[in-house]
Length: 477
Image (cartoon, rainbow, N blue to C red; front, top):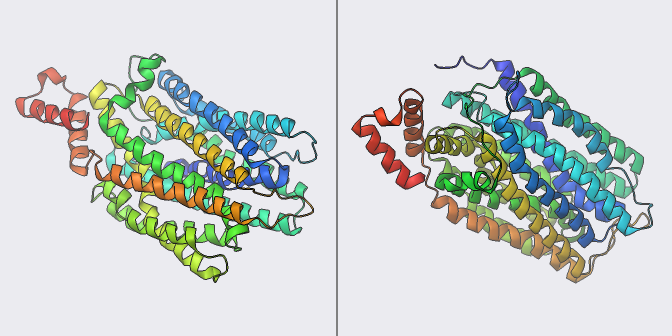
């Protein structure tokens, strides 16, 4: 039976929740590595190791959280209990993560504290993220409504990304110039932003609904169930596309602060503002196209421009006018916008394929495996970035010298680590997206057969439907 349309206030509340998904990840991605190196005083390799260990832990627990969510049966649904609990826990763990330990003498204890608090952060964050992304495919069964609510959440996510990269980068610049104290830095970042991220998540736990049918059978968490989503060809393709985009963005976010401070001698706030502002301007176009063309085309269409422009950023001479680097960053953002925005819009379509193949809808397992692979790969990438800084001779900032002059080797290391990885990853992403099997036409076929399967057993389908199913099975299953 067709579900009643979502009320506007529920759509807005659910979309508001991606303030966490876009904002918290953006703030941590942009600020945490340089917080550990330039405020806490950790060697870049040790700082990256702290992040890597935590990301590996995150990768390990994500699939388990997905299966646990799939198997949960409660009065408020499968996802909302974990969204609510994670939101409450997040307030404490985020405050602990940014606690200044710069006066501790031992680098070992600084690293241990960073690992411990970041592990707690990733645990709470994963509880929220896996459940929220699963809910994005289950909050409505109506296709256009699902597309519209996911577009709306991505608008919120991008706005939050803008706020939570620009404002923290401004605060870091103010701290380095001496106009913000370390205590003020902590109160704004650790306490203020923690409350800002947690509030909408807690409200979603109380006031949203889950509308997709809940399977009568429960899944088992073992190696077989863990890798099961990867049996779906369409889902594997989506994972590859998501990996390339998200890891490239992780490294760009971590590297742009170092690039702005030490290479381009410009403002990280301006770099980030241009990048995010262009993406916001692209939303109306992407929103207009998402129900009209293949979503994979939105992903890859602008990537050649992004690759050429970002190579320009990487080789741009430090003594040239900074405006040129800003313009090249704008062109990079213009070409990258489709890839940045489209993966989670495709995600519910890939889950539809999984339901048609398996006969039930293990959305949490799909979300968990997607996040697991992303976090594991991202951990390796961030560690490589930190090692590149360390071996290239990067000089750590101190309270006495907040912006040290870096040797030529460190500047070259920053250029290669940030730009080289982005170009390589998005070149692969372009090739993968061109071959992605889940076209708009096939998605429509999947939804039609899925609706039929919910009413009539496959054994009772007519010959034409059986033939269509077998053809789809060969192409996207």
